[in-house]
Image 1: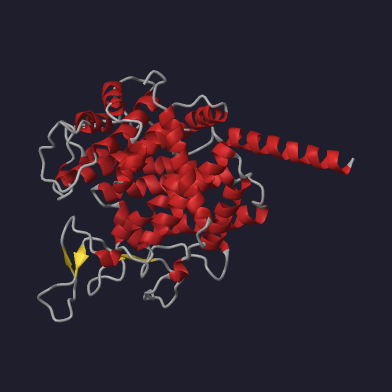
Image 2: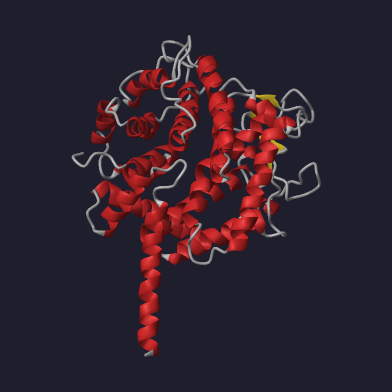
Length: 423
């Protein structure tokens, strides 16, 4: 009898894991819930496309690596924030360098598009935050697709270390983000660092919410952290400077705030961000679909894409939450769809990008185009999606190791976006 009872408990636990994962698929902010649910079913029944199987293995490998890593924390950085507390997040602005004409190099000077390696090490928190949120997302998705509780347990442990445990938690602010030595301890542009709290963390938290080992006190503590952080985003002078930024920074501010407001069930804040995004669209996009402020950069393709990534993410969230239609919003200038129309042909590497540029990963456009067609139930961009997918061999997911952005795009295409079955 005890053995039978144990077996029944094990079977019931497995059923609850499966049911929980399926239920969570339809209530996400940024990830495509229905597509995730279909992908999970296809993987489970061994009916997934070979590219989807490879993308799943890639994701699983990332989650397995995270299983064996110590939990990250902002307290692990080498530099001490101006506040004197290692619990405060600190990062250095990527495009600023010591002034070669000054004995001490101060103040640092800007070299647009040239990344200073000093901004990308463990002495500050920028890389650590990006890695942490990527790992938690990978672990949450691995739990969702496999039901393996090891992934959920590790994600929970990492979340507690970063947000909850008194010895290691991050204070809910970005006061010292993207600082420039000799110029500013922190700048409003550093609010951009926090976009991952929305685009990666809120859906991961939603997926993990009913996973074994996640307790009511955990949920209350994480809710309190994000409530405090949202208050900082809405009311701090630094964050208000980001809100007013006329380029991709302003777009990402709106997307970040809206995503966190969605998690905290604050629909009025989402509506405020939709209105803000309307202003960004009107000010950023010309009638021909170009984005002048992004085209002025030395990495013009990247920033044109990057701004649209923020706006499409917010447009999708606005649509899902009933907060408004950003897809078709247009006044006298351009529109979001107009900007996507302009960019779509450049998903083909053979089409020359006519602007000053340092780097280009054309494939990154495909998840945005797929998201748009899915949101609008249209085939507006299918020819570009088909062309890009058809030119990718099934080996590209593994051979793209040297290009992180391309690898991520391929994973999103095959694991999260689910291209049409005939491709």
